[in-house]
Image 1 (cartoon, helix red, strand yellow):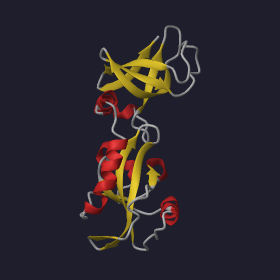
Image 2: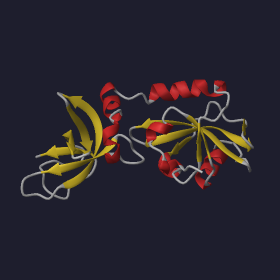
Image 3: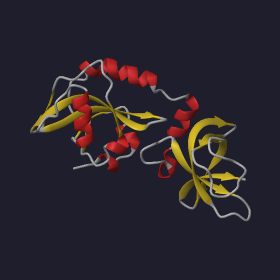
Image 4: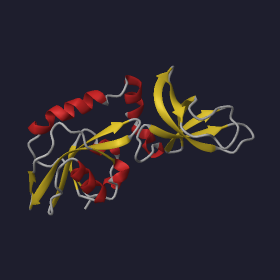
Length: 204
């Protein structure tokens, strides 16, 4: 059984999937006026929220009978969000055969509300640096800071823009060493190939 944590965000983004139920999901269903099925899970739609990380919108509970998935009544006008970090241990089945029609309106609203800027989409599309991405926050990238006489230091940077071929992002943590930059500053960085691997580097 595949778990959410085993998949790259690209495999789950813009997909309807079937998630197994954990305590968090049971609580979300209850707060949304839905019951957790004894044999089944929840249908959910995956997307990237830059601030909140990879997110599943719970669409409806669903029973599983053999290979057949039977959606149960949901709450069409209520948004019920589940962050990936809350579901990493859950089982996941991608692309279950279900009628998408009842969920199309909600999915369209999500896609419009969380559509990335052209620059963020461009950085998000670079799979060469996926190993540098936070596993739960795809737009947060581990950037290696380099400066003469300093030890290399990894800092988290949230991708924001592309300017003259360089990526620019917001520094999410205060560096341990004095690079002259601080948390929330905008930091330019480059994608650099070393051997067979790619890294994100910012030189000072």
